[in-house]
Image (cartoon, rainbow, N blue to C red; front, side, top):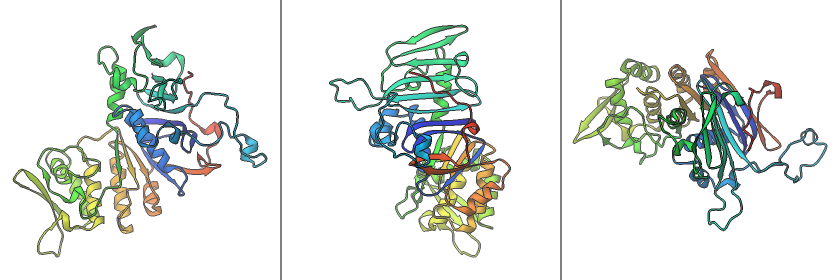
Length: 386
């Protein structure tokens, strides 16, 4: 489980360090930075998947992703006593992201490469990358340390050089995941690759979830919901089928879901009291289909270490939100869950759980901050120096 998330100089996240628990509910007004926090988490996950350079390129490049305000927001600026103007930089441009967990901590420092004739001179370069044990980075608990192209690993009381020629644009998580030479790197890579993000399931007439799909075991629902029928049948056979039926009954009393196979493809059918025939996925309302997707996602037979739900209330009737909250609270017993939401009724139902940790974001002078968090309230955190 993640215990701390830290981001510096990423969009509105100028300097944010937040504590985390098993169920985290992120709220705030429009423009407060909720989407930026979500994107920062996805960027961290991409570090171990497709690569951070590609992920940033899809966002418009490093220049678009960097904090657009002054290097330092002084007390006088915050009080409105002096104007906010360009400053002479004291430090190199750096986009930093990291987290601490119950097993390992990780930090990544990105910047611009040295001027050259390369056509890729705007690609971000990894300046520093560290893995450690414990709640925050200290020299004594540093396990794997990368500076530029060189990476070393701790062996008892000494350091051993693992590689001196890493690609500057790619994480060591993608280049050094060796179970014998660097087991910590492999474990962390698999942890990040296991994170799941669900963001705005499509429910339009051409939505993938409405179409029949290949009949193959699917323990993890795809991010677009395209394999809903296969995921549902997989849960019925190897997952907690009683919990799935209970979740369905909680939202739609008396309803049943059946999965039928035809020519190697699965189709989903919804049986509801009072109707003479079942409804195909193509006939379901947007809200009903979306709720079935949430049931399948949250009852996965392979719960991840982290699951992030971005505005799960979309397209749902307000009367369904208490049932959705119960579904999410139950899932938080198997995975660490993040919920980013605008729906007051869903937020209230989640906050009724004793395990809920509320994170209300606000924006001041363009900077995202955690409401009521004073400097001494921040979890301990130290960025590795270049």
